[in-house]
Image 1 (cartoon, helix red, strand yellow):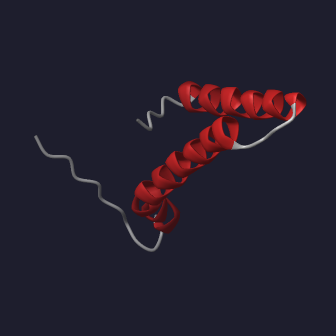
Image 2 (spheres, rainbow, N blue to C red):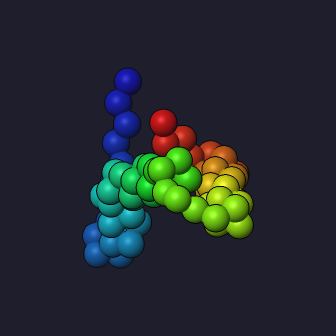
Length: 72
């Protein structure tokens, strides 16, 4: 099975750039996930800071799920 994406440049420049940058965007999301996890697990945080990081992580995963994005 093959899939071919075709763009009419320069009219479709934004869509083309989005497709070309998608792997870099995924890498950024994975890096953000890892950084949040490392902060939560390895930093010496106060209780309210743990709660904030946990809330950010939860929101991050909810946003990914609502957009049907799987990063692992």
